[in-house]
Length: 90
Image (tube, rainbow, N blue to C red; front, top):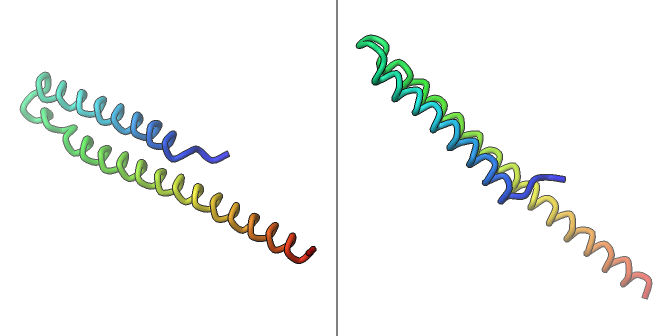
């Protein structure tokens, strides 16, 4: 069974914010504890992780939405088929 849209939002949203918090925490630690050369070395990594995680979130939401609409379209086709089959019997 495909995950619902709301479940996908909660799951991927939690992963997104968890990863962003961890990477930013590591970046802050490097800023305070690192020397002049390596103090901002994780800033590029934080930007890349942020872009990757938001892309993952959007793609999974899009996939969950498509699965939901596919299931709804299939239900509509089944109902129309049953109705036309019943009409043919009469």
